[in-house]
Image (cartoon, rainbow, N blue to C red; front, side):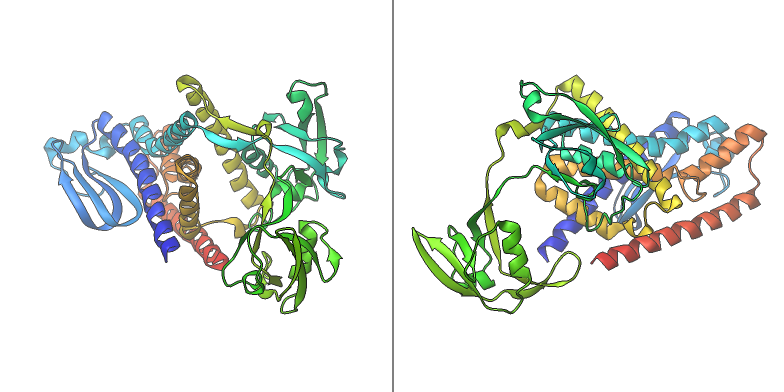
Amino acid sequence: MYDILWNAASFIVALGLLITAHEYGHFYIARRCGVKVERFSIGFGKPIWRRVGQDGTEYVIAMIPLGGYVKMLDERVDEVPAALQSQAFNRKNVWQRIAIVAAGPVANFIFAVFALYIMYLIGVPSLKPVINATHQNSSASVITVTEPMQILAVSGQKVRNWEEVNLALVGHIGDDSLSLTLAPLARLEGQSGDERTYTLDTRNWKFDPEKESAISTLGLGMLRPQVLPLVAAVTPGSAADEAGIKAGDEIVGINGVSYGGWEWFVATIQASSNKPLQVTIKRGGEQKQLTATPKPGKDAQGNEVGLIGITPQASELPESMRIQLKYGVLDSLAVAADKTWQLTVVSVKMIGKLFTGDVSVKNLSGPISIAQGAGNSANYGLVYFLGFLALISVNLGIINLLPLPVLDGGHLLYYFVEVITGKPVPEKVQEIGFRFGAALLLMLMSIALFNDFARL
């Protein structure tokens, strides 16, 4: 219940900030163009707070936090007194109307830059993207790894941590190839070594983003902390807890077979659901045999496996692997703008790949997934929540620019037609377009909601 409430609260905060930024963009430019704004509303439905400002605008926070709107004086909607007709939206020239409509999505991009700016001012703890192996028969198997190698660029785009590597790789889904520029970690620490670029064949590179990582499916073996045969924690009520295994115990073997690494241990446990196992542990220098019966559970693919309830200890990565992405007042702005551009490019590519079929519509996410993402990022801290806000804000800006008549992009399409032809698009044509756009948007929202419930 706590998780649900936390996710809901994080979702409302995130959506409230993004909607406010978007609608304020419309509001600000409308006022600059001399349009009278009657209402500025965050949310739909019954108002829970309202105030009339000195400018005559009614400011409202409504009950349903799934959108917002700026109601402007418009003769196409209501009768307008002769004295106020010059302040009506429809009386403004086409370029002013374009500016007012475009200001909403533009405000989302500006908000993304602002969120990332604050994030980089605070500093983001990260890990260098270092690999120590590549998987056989994978796209990355062309890379020979004899020592830890750091990824410096993906298809010419510089990367500093694993998050940037993942973002860059996702943008190449459906492409025939991509390149990786690597250098030995030793060279980057002041020793000798050569930088080299590899071209990877990605024609057969396919994966499910819900269950798999772009990094691992490409065949890159991330340099991770070494998992030790020591128990860090035991889940209360688990098979390990019932068997008497305690934190600090060293795993020696199972059923007389010596410990063969964490992956071996996990595979043995998963294959032994409801089967008693003799687990040999060392505690205080003395070996003990304990009987543990793994309880049935599910893996990431939904298959039944045995679970024992142990968390292992891991070795610490060297400090040379850790970086702090933190910049000064001016540098943070440049980095934030560049990051916003990267997010925009990748998001546009992914939308295009949805239409070409390179990315499945199963990857569309709705409000439930967004709420979970908001809650998860907020759990990790402010800097991660700011990064999440920037990503969603960029996507909100892009989606609103799609040429669907019910969105800002659809209005802009009509206005640019007016610029070219010199006369407005006929009302009947606009009405047909709005109906078509509403139907298509409803279909996409239905798919996204279905995907959300399927994930649950």
